[in-house]
Length: 168
Image (spheres, rainbow, N blue to C red):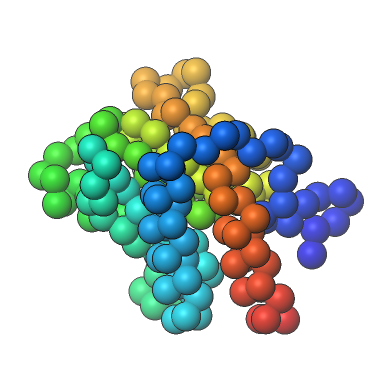
């Protein structure tokens, strides 16, 4: 439970931006992955990476399955996309993810030079795309990612809240 006025993941003090149809479709793919994660007992976070309007890779959290705390949806989707595209840069790609990226994932997105990140629920405890910090747009780094947050926020947040409520 949040304390001292903190908001739970999926709650936001930020206003949702107008959303373009391709971003709705991208988030739908990420939400599908998040539901897959929940069905296997993983924290329901999903990601889908698109390039030129086509899905290149998708993934969901696999931290429990792999016994690896770094097996986050964003990281897995980026790794798969890099391998499939035989490249080390994704500057012409958009990553859709249901939860604001953490420090590890934000760092990986900057290193892979992802062009754009669209996320659903804000994460006030670990989010590094504006909530707790902002690695994705840090002015001192050599690559800054375009970020849009709050897309399908209610649906993304509800998945997380229901998952953790059912675990208690």
